[in-house]
Length: 146
View (cartoon, rainbow, N blue to C red):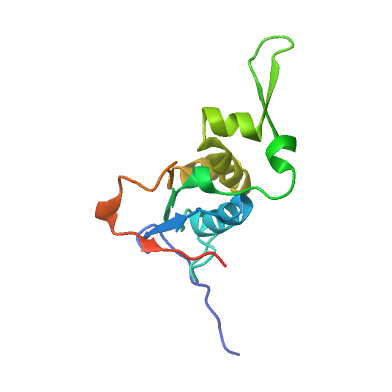
């Protein structure tokens, strides 16, 4: 009988690349799904659920990502101050005025695993409000969203 072996990825085998996504005119959710997919490493044949095999992602023009329907006024972000009765809520419109990068980061973060591995993967994400970014020396490849 033929014996099969399983290929196990080690930290030495992981090669990280840099990708850039332009979110201008694309729905926020579609950008977040593609970013989370690449951050996890699911686009690679060496994907391993318990390791950070994903690549680095740069998202530019995050403030120009669109929301369909009435989500700009209906979507609400919650946070708690830590005090009694301290649950605060902010709509998407107000959040875009205060922190235009936060909705994109929150969407991607929610799609990553919870715990130490997810936090490690989230560190590989860079989100910028405009078209300028600091990681030009990394020579990122453009990632198209259909």
